[in-house]
Length: 140
Image 1 (tube, rainbow, N blue to C red):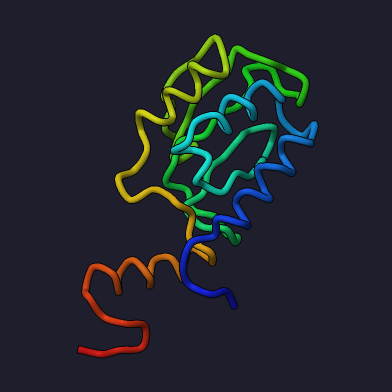
Image 2 (spheres, helix red, strand yellow):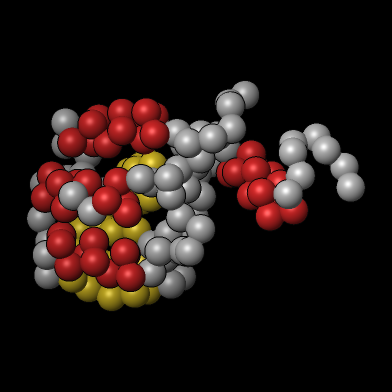
């Protein structure tokens, strides 16, 4: 079980791990990390795609677009595709990592970042309580 609140330290550790990794294009990770709005989100990799979550624990949120290389493989550095948040939503192609990052930033949900320290279910409860003005466990 996690504690409610910002997962800033967890998010930064995940970014540092990706910056030192070869699981995804270094160009892409550097471009995404340079964008403060994305740097607040929890980064994760799947199928050479860079995903961004509003929470720090699995199963991560799927409400932010993601970026993948047009040709699979961790060393590929563009062009990129941008999709999401679901796999059925095609956003477009970008010639550079910076262009792909800009496409994601344009489509960030209004309730993004900083990432919540916990699971998607805990995040949903936290957001519901914040909107209703109730403390966790408090009934109306």
